[in-house]
Length: 362
Image 1: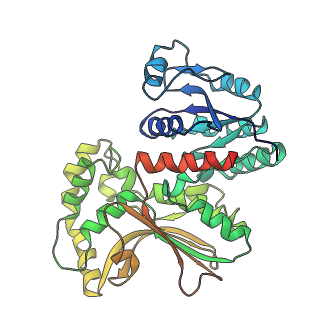
Image 2 (image 1 turned 120 degrees about the vertical axis):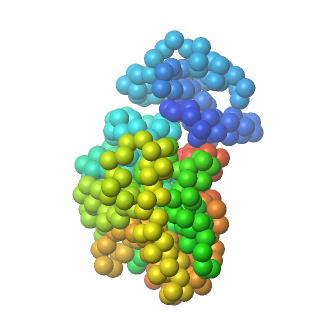
Image 3 (image 1 turned 30 degrees about the vertical axis):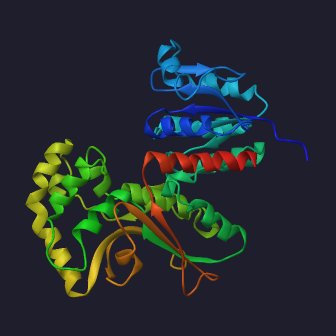
């Protein structure tokens, strides 16, 4: 069998995840199946068709010394001229995601942890699938749902092998996992909701503005991505994550607070509401968990705060900011297939991206 050509890699976004990915990529033993040909930050870009002359200790200096401004349209033309190339988008930018169909149409693979393209409008999603089918270029997005956890590929394997997926349910947000693992336990008492959120923010588990986590949008995006991997649900979310039934935990009176610090300062005013929810769950022998559900049989996709018995895996198996996802299918019944582990962090997210890159060359 002829050896696949070396894959030229263009990385857009060199923040926490991007930097870690570059380290993992450059640490691969020789001969590597990859050639790093481009790096792009928010300010600068580098490109060398033969491969950038950088290593793990020099790429950041070389990029900051560049005077070339980012130009994704120029990058598209540069990559199209190479034998085999992949765009790795480590940003969360909508404008980068919108260009995926153009890259794919030119035969350039796309690998990304960016949720925007796959959880947004049906129009963009359809354009991505159409461009991929016509050119043969692949798009891979494992790290959009569970960072390095094998969630997306597991679902695709279930569907591709003919299993009938009945329901997917899980704790998809590392932030929400940490908050409710600490707020709602099997024993009475415990810290107030606002204090848990404050500590989570101080530890860097939340976005700078915690409302961006508490509104449930991140979970809704992940559910939209999974739902679109199930044929019967592909058109069920015309507006993507905006079509998911989502319960926001942001108090209505704080929805207009634009500053994260001010939000945390005002959140104690609503502790009594969350305390009531905790006490109700405890009386039932349950804990509170913010979960996402893709109910295929009932054509329902929702993100909501739910009660689970203290003996349920969502109560007993979670720690820290772990994710846990259950796949209920005809083959995995009555005991579901469970994927569990760290669902956030630069190292594991970059690992998820790297695993997708390896799928293109192995």
